[in-house]
Image (cartoon, rainbow, N blue to C red):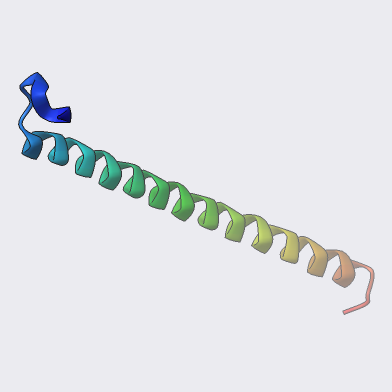
Length: 59
């Protein structure tokens, strides 16, 4: 029996669930920030390319 150390099974389940939910929310926050920064980088690159072509008279 795993829970013979004196920790109630409900408490273990709460800890496990909070750990799972916590790590999921952290991952979602990281993903959101990553997508935000990727969008910024792509916008910057696209603007840079357009300005480069425009300055050379290609657009």
